[in-house]
Every structure is written in C-alpha cells, then in structure tokens.
Image (cartoon, rainbow, N blue to C red; front, top):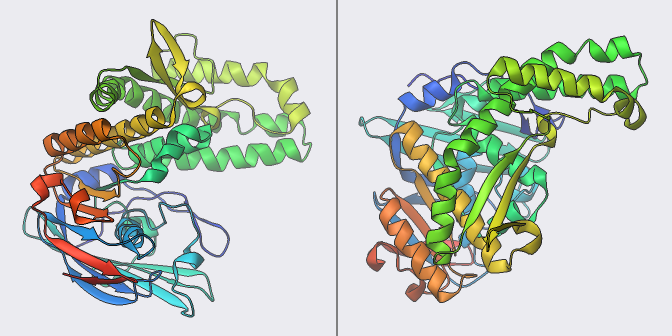
Length: 406
C-alpha cells in the first residue's frame, strides 16, 4: 500500500526536533480505516524482550502483578500511533537494559480486508529512529503516523487536568492533528515562525526585524486558534455529558481561553485582525521580556466545576476523584472524535483504569465504555476480578517479568 503523506513536529532525532511536512494529512487518514491490531512483534522494548503476539479481533485482557510490564505493553502498542512514549520519556529509556536497539512491529487489518505493517525501531548509539510502512522506510516519520487510531486511558491522564496549560495544549494538538484537515500544517508553520520571531526579540534586533515575521505568525496562528476554538465549542457538550455520567450527576465544563484577545471575532479574518492588534499592543512588553507574549502558544483549555451556579477552576478546587473524572471525560471525547472523523471505532487501551476510582465511579465508567466503545480493547489489570469490561469475556493473557502467556 502506498503511504499517504502528512507530517508533524516530533521531539527526537539528532537535533532534538524532526521537521515533517504535511500533504492532505487528515484526508488520507479518513480514507484508511484500520479497525484492529492483529499482530505485535516486540524486540527489546523495555522489559518485554523478544515476543510475537497474535491479538484476537475483540481484544485481550492482560493480567499480572504490578511492575511486571503491563503498562510497557500498552506503551509499545501506542508507540506505533505517535512514535513517542505516552509516558513522556525519551526513546533511550525504551531500549531494554544492556541492549542497543528496540523494534516494534504492528500488523493492522482494515475494514476493506487490507493489511499494513507499521514498524518503529530506535538505535541508542546514533539516536536514530527508523519507521517503515510495509517494509519501506519512510523519509518522513509522519508518513506512518496515526495508523492505529488508538486512545489510551491511563492513571497518568490526571496530569491533563492537574498539570500546566502546556499539557492541555498538547492534548488538543494530538487530537486535532489527526482529525482536522490543515491543522498540522498551520501548527508547524506557527511554531517555526514563532521560533524565529522570538530569536529576533531575544537578540535585541530592531522592531522592523521583529515585525517582519508578524504576517506569517498572524496567518498561521489564527488558523490554529480558530480550529482549537471550534473543536472545543463543538465538543464541550460531550465533555459535560461524560463528566456528569461518570460523576453521578455533578457538572463540569470545558472552555477555550485563547492567548489572543478576540473580542467577539468570528471568522478567520476577524481573528487575524484581533491577533495583529494584540501584537501591536504588546510591543513594549515583548521588548522588555524578549519573547512573544500573545498567541496560541499561550492558550488554555479551562475546566471548571459547577457548584451552585458558580464555576470553580477544576485544577485548583477539584478533588483527586473530580480531576480523574475530568481526565476520563477528555479521553472519551477523544474517542468520539475518532469515531466521527474516521468512521470506525478506535482501538481502546485501558491501563488499570479502575485502580484509582471509587466503586460507584468505576461502575459508571464501565457502563460508559460498554455502551460507547464497541471496537477492539486491550486492558491491563492486577487481578482477574478487575477485568469486567465486555462482561469479563475478553481472552485472558498473563504477564510475569515481561513474558506474556495466553
């Protein structure tokens, strides 16, 4: 199968950033409907050693004690979606101790009966990452990005709510990069221009040199702003619904707070005008701080609790359970976006997802997953009784010291 071209800025590589170009990224993804992971080949990924695993169409439950490698398995699967760890670690740390290279291969089956093989390998010595699609090395990593349409639910998702704004911007960027045509390219352009403009400010260059970047910054930044705003506006009702369903009737909302004062700007031209005005008004502050102070790099996805008519910052006032509920709601919104934009069910990866929820919330999230997610599921749990999804009927695998047995 011929690879479809698209791209993204990914951390990694010899210089820290791999620059990738995009050509009709999301449209290509919409045309390719891979519905399940059929086989996974592992070589020296963390503690998983050398293994070849055949996945049932409905998915599998992986049961084992803590620190045996359950999360590592989900990490290896999700690596084939984004070619980076969802645990925010570097590729060097994914290579097994004493080894120099890891390799992960996933075979994906489409609803049209096609099969594609996605391979990712990383060499520690040269810090070289290699990605192939059906055995053909991709000149750009993004030529194979996003093939699994996977969503991972993990206890660490609470950081989406508890962490800083950059965590939530990254969430938006991942979801929108794989669902909204043109978003990736606008994001890439904005980041590149922002970097050059900040270099001019930091270097104390004249105002004319700084403003030379403004036209491109405004154009690309307005595109990013509009896409983020429209997505949040479209999905905020679903977020509220999911939160209420998991919490047992309590309310929460999400709201887009742009890093540009929009003052009611509606269309792209209005947003560009508002951004340009904000830049002009920030000249003195930028000169003093040596950096661009307005734009989508300062955006916030703001989540609040509804409390007797008041809206309280969930990050500041939410309990641990409330923040975990909001994180689950965000992941459910992500899964819905995949269903609606790609036309098939996502691959759901559940990493001991019920461990930190109280019993009532666990039952409600279980009910939601049973109702909403009908595709392939890979779930990890410390004991068999924790595997209740699909009526406990998923095939069971065990894991011990990284070795998986059916």
